[in-house]
Length: 88
Image 1 (cartoon, rainbow, N blue to C red):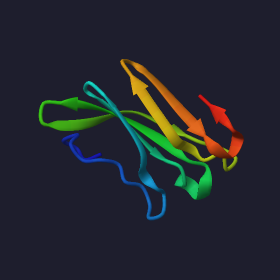
Image 2 (image 1 turned 60 degrees about the vertical axis):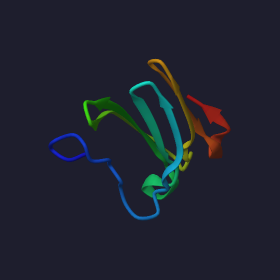
Image 3 (image 1 turned 90 degrees about the vertical axis):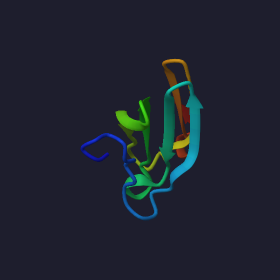
Image 4 (image 1 turned 180 degrees about the horizontal axis):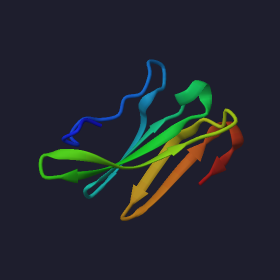
Protein backbone atom coordinates (compact mmCIF):
# COMPACT_ATOMS: atom_id res chain seq x y z
CA UNK A 1 0.00 0.00 0.00
CA UNK A 2 0.93 3.60 -0.33
CA UNK A 3 2.74 5.47 2.40
CA UNK A 4 -0.55 6.90 3.65
CA UNK A 5 -2.03 3.40 3.93
CA UNK A 6 -5.06 4.01 1.74
CA UNK A 7 -3.93 2.24 -1.45
CA UNK A 8 -4.46 -1.47 -2.06
CA UNK A 9 -1.67 -3.89 -2.93
CA UNK A 10 -2.48 -5.00 -6.44
CA UNK A 11 0.50 -7.18 -7.24
CA UNK A 12 1.19 -8.16 -10.82
CA UNK A 13 -1.13 -8.49 -13.77
CA UNK A 14 -2.81 -11.88 -13.70
CA UNK A 15 -2.57 -12.37 -9.89
CA UNK A 16 -6.39 -12.46 -9.71
CA UNK A 17 -6.32 -9.91 -6.89
CA UNK A 18 -9.91 -9.51 -5.70
CA UNK A 19 -11.25 -12.75 -7.17
CA UNK A 20 -12.31 -13.66 -3.61
CA UNK A 21 -13.23 -11.07 -0.97
CA UNK A 22 -14.78 -11.01 2.49
CA UNK A 23 -15.71 -8.09 4.72
CA UNK A 24 -16.42 -8.16 8.46
CA UNK A 25 -16.76 -4.85 10.26
CA UNK A 26 -13.57 -2.90 9.57
CA UNK A 27 -11.65 -5.92 8.22
CA UNK A 28 -11.38 -6.76 4.53
CA UNK A 29 -9.77 -9.99 3.30
CA UNK A 30 -8.77 -10.15 -0.37
CA UNK A 31 -7.56 -13.26 -2.21
CA UNK A 32 -5.12 -13.38 -5.14
CA UNK A 33 -5.13 -17.04 -6.12
CA UNK A 34 -2.77 -16.74 -9.07
CA UNK A 35 -0.11 -14.64 -7.31
CA UNK A 36 3.45 -15.78 -8.00
CA UNK A 37 2.42 -18.03 -10.85
CA UNK A 38 -0.24 -19.96 -8.92
CA UNK A 39 1.19 -20.08 -5.41
CA UNK A 40 -1.48 -17.57 -4.43
CA UNK A 41 -1.78 -15.14 -1.58
CA UNK A 42 -4.17 -13.12 0.54
CA UNK A 43 -4.21 -9.66 2.08
CA UNK A 44 -5.95 -8.47 5.25
CA UNK A 45 -6.80 -4.75 5.40
CA UNK A 46 -8.24 -2.72 8.26
CA UNK A 47 -10.32 0.39 7.74
CA UNK A 48 -8.77 3.39 9.48
CA UNK A 49 -10.84 6.55 9.08
CA UNK A 50 -11.52 6.98 5.37
CA UNK A 51 -8.73 4.66 4.20
CA UNK A 52 -7.52 1.09 4.42
CA UNK A 53 -4.19 -0.18 5.78
CA UNK A 54 -2.59 -3.54 5.03
CA UNK A 55 -2.46 -5.50 8.31
CA UNK A 56 -1.24 -8.91 7.16
CA UNK A 57 -0.20 -10.74 4.01
CA UNK A 58 -0.06 -14.49 3.42
CA UNK A 59 1.92 -16.08 0.59
CA UNK A 60 1.16 -19.53 -0.79
CA UNK A 61 3.70 -22.14 -1.84
CA UNK A 62 3.96 -25.02 -4.30
CA UNK A 63 1.21 -23.80 -6.64
CA UNK A 64 -1.50 -24.28 -4.00
CA UNK A 65 -3.58 -21.25 -5.21
CA UNK A 66 -3.89 -19.81 -1.70
CA UNK A 67 -6.63 -17.18 -1.60
CA UNK A 68 -8.91 -18.91 -4.09
CA UNK A 69 -11.56 -18.57 -1.37
CA UNK A 70 -11.47 -16.34 1.70
CA UNK A 71 -13.63 -15.54 4.70
CA UNK A 72 -13.18 -13.26 7.68
CA UNK A 73 -15.34 -12.93 10.77
CA UNK A 74 -14.24 -10.83 13.69
CA UNK A 75 -10.52 -11.41 13.98
CA UNK A 76 -10.50 -14.86 12.35
CA UNK A 77 -9.44 -15.30 8.72
CA UNK A 78 -9.97 -18.48 6.69
CA UNK A 79 -8.05 -19.03 3.45
CA UNK A 80 -8.76 -21.69 0.85
CA UNK A 81 -6.08 -23.28 -1.32
CA UNK A 82 -7.97 -24.97 -4.15
CA UNK A 83 -5.06 -26.85 -5.70
CA UNK A 84 -4.39 -28.62 -2.37
CA UNK A 85 -8.04 -29.00 -1.36
CA UNK A 86 -6.95 -27.28 1.87
CA UNK A 87 -8.26 -24.60 4.20
CA UNK A 88 -6.01 -22.58 6.53
